[in-house]
Image (cartoon, rainbow over all chains, first blue to last red; front, side, top):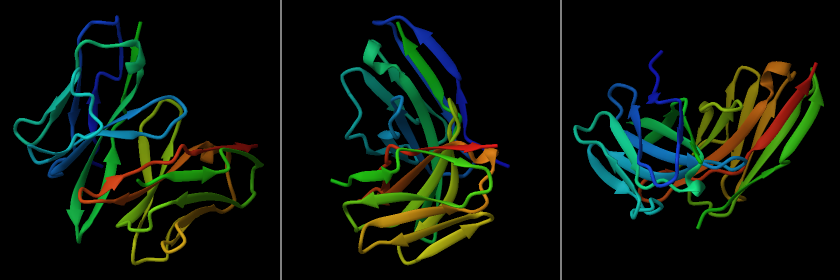
Length: 115
Length: 112
């Protein structure tokens, strides 16, 4: 069964350092999402791509976060510089429009710890 | 702004019980609603998706209902098993980008 792939699974970094996460969506899925999930809370959307275009980045802290999906397939989320408050699970999801319905499928996530 | 509330926040039941998890949302203009399961430290697994035109969806021992006009959805789990222990999240979708808004989840523990 096709799955969303993410790497790394775990990342420990010191504050002020740069960190990057990678996501490979299910083949053929045009829509890709990055979420941040703080412990004990539900995921919150950071950025949504349709093919290579950003369609929603209203909750992305643009002073330190950036995301790209250059060829409309895999994607990278970067944080520079990392802050203590960035410690969270970063989840990637993808979806395919079927009859107007977008069912989202999630990857295993990257657990980030900033020290 | 869509707000999603899940009650109860935590639930512990003995194995074999039937149970209901509740989800309420403030904006009824949704396209669909997804229920997810999340095991500790893991990603989300999609359980059921109910389209806004549907009233319920079933998958095995799971049944989800949707009352869009009142802003409510329930997830019914029949004959619970210890392997059902996880956090259950509901997420209605809406807006121009079909965005999912998540509740904080219900942490379920099924005791053997």
